[in-house]
Image 1 (cartoon, rainbow, N blue to C red):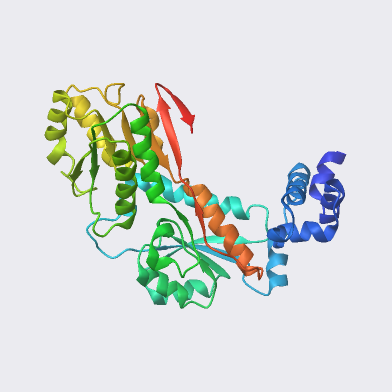
Image 2: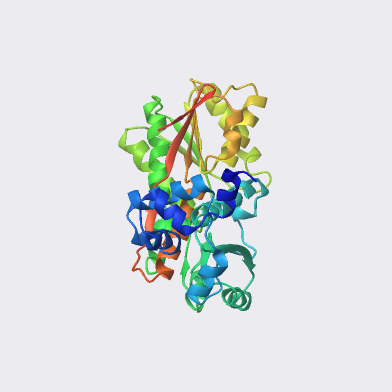
Length: 351
């Protein structure tokens, strides 16, 4: 057996400490209570651990904490409703990205994580007995938040709840949908558009849709532009076809000069429908702006923009916040600002 392989097999916390030029106790804190260590020192330890192939002993960490050593990512099964984006199969990629965020936060730690599903309070209580803390997946009703608040373990809510007043007393990591809507509208204005058509729906009970609409309208109206808003039953079969002919007529007559929608899937259905009708968009004459930065936008030409709420970052930060809370630190809710992604011709530009 060569020396390099032997070092990898027998690497210890002390070896990591020597390579990072810190104490063994500091290495332990990085993996058990990372917020107690400065960012430069924490990064030095993580770099040394990666170089040496060191992974902390998760079982030993759980014993030291006298707990299960597990953080649970919990998804609630939503009751039947007129619209819920998470029920659309085309958004499965979003859940995978959220899980990757949790995994990223816990990769170099002594914590395990599990993925759980809860139908009701009884199931949630059973999950809470198998973990030390919960990161919720898209809690969007007060009933869900109140159930979590009654559990015997700490929790962090995520992700659409960021600006909703009724959730301000809870611990959360959210996204600012209103700001995302403003970026969406501002980008169209920067393209010289003054007559956009904006397709949305369910604003009366889907807060994220209401916030995106408010932000979009603020930036458009501030510029002196004159938007046309179409409300449809977003996500429902036949909703987009019901307005497609009207949008096509507006494009042909020049009454609108750009297209935007409350989410990418609605936008793409519009764009493909218009292309089938012989109207080329996205194009310089008809730029388009969506929301969610789904992976599918890469198949369309520019100019095309979408708002990325970065679920991996949101759930990574939510998990880090929970770990800090579990270590006894006083923590506060935070907002991860969305980002504008632009597809210009065939290249992607991050703004």
